[in-house]
Length: 100
Image (cartoon, rainbow, N blue to C red; front, side, top):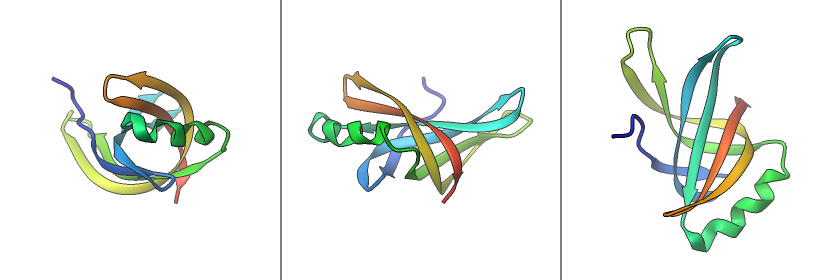
């Protein structure tokens, strides 16, 4: 069973499902995420690779020190790093670069 489940989200005005999550790195906490659309909207994601930042609105999962996960809805500026075809359509992987 997956730790995080996709929720209704929006990436640069494109409606789909996705989430962001926190993770610890040697530089501190960073946020990354994924966004899914069906095959009909897959082409709309391609131009996002060329942009430095786009807006993501959706659920953010954050673990606290005890390991408990909480979720909240937030809006971030993100950099889309990669696109991949998956069985549900297309997946965009992103890194959060700032607050919107």
